[in-house]
Length: 304
Image 1 (tube, rainbow, N blue to C red):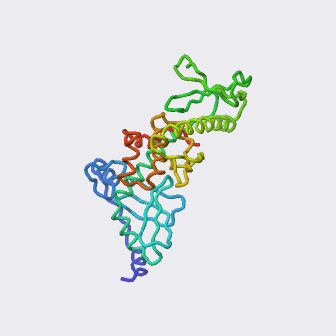
Image 2 (image 1 turned 120 degrees about the vertical axis):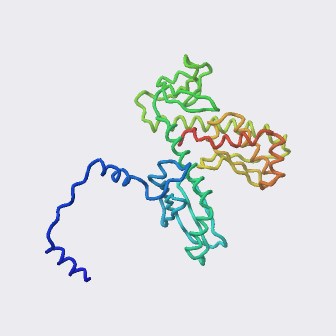
Image 3 (image 1 turned 45 degrees about the vertical axis):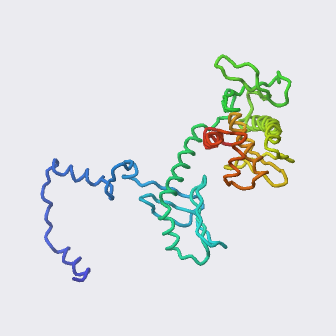
């Protein structure tokens, strides 16, 4: 029947009041309406069953559903032969050859769904933990230094010898060493952060030089230059000319972890890849490197 005719007939049909419904019988229907449209899978988190996980890259231009999760990712084409995936702090990035059809990209994403979702979930958890450890830069704020907690103590009178800031030798009543910073109580969070960062970078460079000089003779290599970096996820790098770059934020970790990164980069002066021979070289000076390497994934260090 034509829709217009059906609508006209509806207008002239007698109105019939709905039959009364027992409220006790209606309740199950209301409850049922809250159930997820997809069947619940044993072992699946309840929040995922009700509301699927959603991951969105800030530069996302495509979206795909992977095992119930909605993933918005940054997609780009380029001069390459294969489809590549990268999961970083911002989310999923995908690059594909210019000639690859989109349905092949989607198929490749579904094929790697387990890996992609695991990395995205790990990244989200890491960001949550980082937010929980975010430092509020003020007098009395605490942060890790060489694996130990230190506490900021603003000292406008500069009652210490060092430039800018100085770490007390003795701990306070709480067992925490104060870091005296030559700033007044009226200093802004940015001023306090900058002063602490400058002190940390000075400590980092001095310590890194000491550890490079310690491990280089053992590995029979010679480093020529040290630069500090502030990379988001990369802790160090090395060039064949002996140049070493180390992330100054390593100073938050305990010395053993710093030693692993230093030995790692110096080992690249002998083996410029990550072959078994390279890891054997690292192991020769840091036998427990595997455990220390895992410590670098600890997100409890401050974000700068």
